[in-house]
Length: 242
Image 1: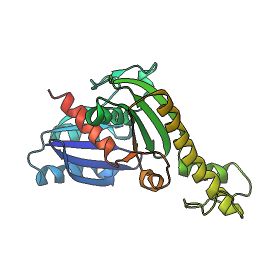
Image 2: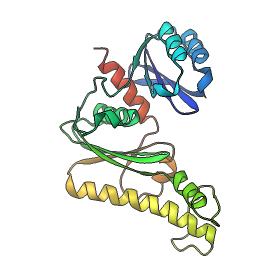
Image 3: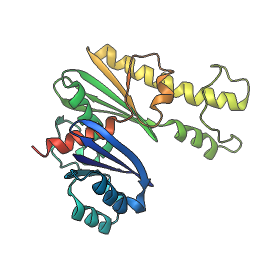
Image 4: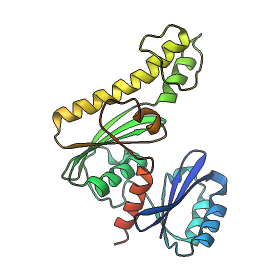
């Protein structure tokens, strides 16, 4: 069994895989990671290996304590991955993007794949049917756009995310919802269309915190998978254990 540790700025996602099957998932506070892993080790005594991403958010003593509990792989740009990385600046490629591309290889190795991660930022990553990663794009996510309108203007309010009733906003609030949400939806649909025009046999994966919200509004054919990053980390761990 494998333990997946995905570290964010405040929370840590913990997941347990039995072979390729996700059997447990939770989110814990950053400061409680060592104690939570101890509990998981007790609940899943067959846990032998782990992978951790975004280790910069953890203290050195936390990493040391985790290593004492389990055989730990720290994911970096130097880690062996199941694809050819053609990114011109591999050191700057986000760990989360590496994991997502690895998941696409596991699930769709014979297809051209566009992975869209709709979170704080919206990232687009493209990998060919020859398992060559070419790169992608990064743009502001939904919440970032709402916050930018509020922070960078004098009078626009900060709103909660909401599906716009119309493309034409009849008030300031409805205009903001239309601009932000329709802007994101049209950006994603347009990006997918551009890739479809250039590459045949394109598979589109949508993941991230806003995936469910966006999947109902997109015109394009997509696969929504909220566990895609965790699956990618599990695959990298297996790939480095053979």
